[in-house]
Length: 176
Ligand code: MN
Image (cartoon, rainbow, N blue to C red; front, side, top):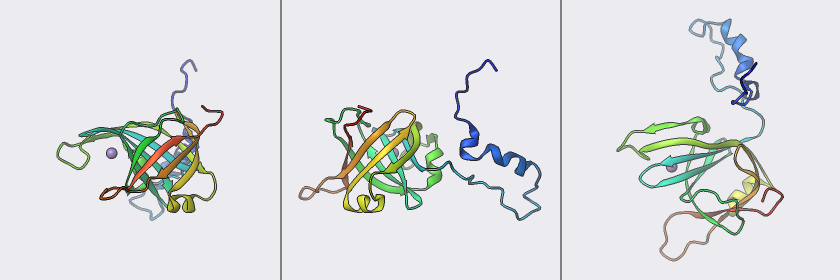
């Protein structure tokens, strides 16, 4: 053995278990699915991408309703519950985006470097859809970097203010 495993075991997201299946088939000759979107590991996807665009920010994404609900957090998350971080709600992204890492060409939307900063699963405290709609979403993160209870709270817009501003806050728990 010798080498420590630096990657999570592939079996977790189902890709390894499909190797045999794929080896046996020619997908240009059979209509069977190649299983491109391999069955993901249980739990809803949570991901943070560090996005070095015009302004550096962290894209915080939670799987909900078959998409990644997304917030741009300029300062990134804070483990200190007293540090509320502005999280600007942006457009939904496809689930596959959670695997994206790379360079968006200059001049394109969001041009710059995208790095996976944290990744894992999340679970809602209470009803996720309801919490999201009401603008008070409480959840537990099970990532490689971030753990424990967190909260996203929608701010009441100030007069004339555009954008959908939320706050990302660490909740006090054993992880703090
Ligand atoms: Mn971004």
